[in-house]
Length: 333
Ligand SMILES: Nc1nc2c(ncn2[C@@H]2O[C@H](COP(=O)(O)OP(=O)(O)OP(=O)(O)O)[C@@H](O)[C@H]2O)c(=O)[nH]1
Ligand SMILES: [Mg+2]
Image (cartoon, rainbow, N blue to C red; front, side, top):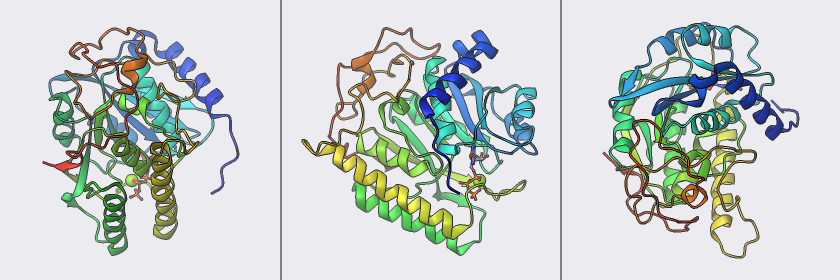
């Protein structure tokens, strides 16, 4: 589906303002963990999904931020009725745009950690603990679940093959071992999402992963489960379309990040601050001492924001974007 050109910054700013105006302190002073969910026409399942989310993960309180954009059903109302903070964007732009906005809301609300899951009930909320634990322990900046290391319900050979092909491709391109590049259950330090360039409107998972790897953040995979979608249908198209668009994002992001890393290529990927356009979030202090090769670009741009509750005080070094890759990245647990 070709999407009409939109002014993303204006839409994001308007949606952000509306979100904070509606939810006030509940949105402005988030607990340490924001569970961010993109939802599109998921009214039949989103209530159940939100209800099943844990009030604490790794001993830290959670809040649920749902971004619905242009849903034609009652996704936003149902999510709200089940206790989520809902950003209801009037135009549909895709899961990538929705998550990017959700990350921003989490950062601006002061959450130190972000956990993502899908609105369709394919992921197990009990596994959030395992996914967040390495980040809270300061051992990783970004953790993704992996069906390859865990389990998957699908018997669709094309899906299985696709997951494998993309994992191998990304491993080769980034020279770091990845076993699953499209798992929706992940956890990260919130500031990581402001430090990388996110511009894919829909097929976002490989863009985020490749960009995070390319920036040298410490990436870890943990075994996790993906169930079949039981309610509603995929928003991503059939296998061939999904695969082609996914492939385009993989190659495009790898090329973009490679150009960014080549001095004098003239394709500076992002601003020195690493922020998304229009991002008004403050730097969230890192957990403990940042590793030598894991750049913390927002730290250089920090504006003295308070520590988020439950997040240890910062000792972030005054670093800017680094081109080093962390050889320990993408290690398996
Ligand atoms: N806000 C928003 N969310 C979306 C959009 N498209 C998909 N999503 C959500 O993103 C999540 C994943 O979408 P799915 O359609 O399940 O795609 P998938 O899980 O990658 O692929 P399947 O295996 O086919 O389910 C779900 O929570 C969707 O509701 C969109 O345009 N806007
Ligand atoms: Mg799905």
